[in-house]
Length: 222
Image (cartoon, rainbow, N blue to C red):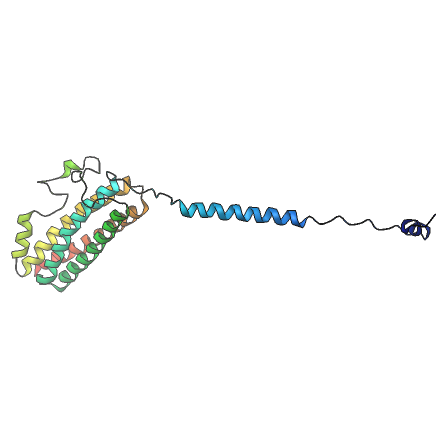
């Protein structure tokens, strides 16, 4: 009988090594490729099907605040430009321009949000309807703190230090109304951008009220 390789190994005292199992690399590669394809397909579907952002609606506090505050700011811009062109104190002229530039910029930001949300810049709601009891705060159709048409005309016609006194008096009241509106939307808003800009408004205008109080004393004493 012929001697096999195993018989020879036993005869000389050695144990033949077991034949190693074949690697399962193809199976592993297959799983990796399938996982990658699944991930890419899922990602592609996510790109093809846009996620709908949770934007504020047409009657939301955020939309109402933006529309109303844009009108509120527009009057402050007019008042600030009048003060910049006619006030006798340089600090009042500087403040007037600062207010005009700041609030004009905020209006642009807020109106951009309305466009992004797909909302009309005007809306159909009554002024101040976005906050509880807001419509009751209207006086002759004007939002809190706003100057009447007669007061605006008086400011346009004023001369000398009367411009300073009238501007500072009207703008302080205007800021108080704006702060009230900003604080209310912070309580109601679920949108981080609206909350942040409202908080900035309140903080900035509170600081400006303090500055206007000092300037008013200076103007009245001159």
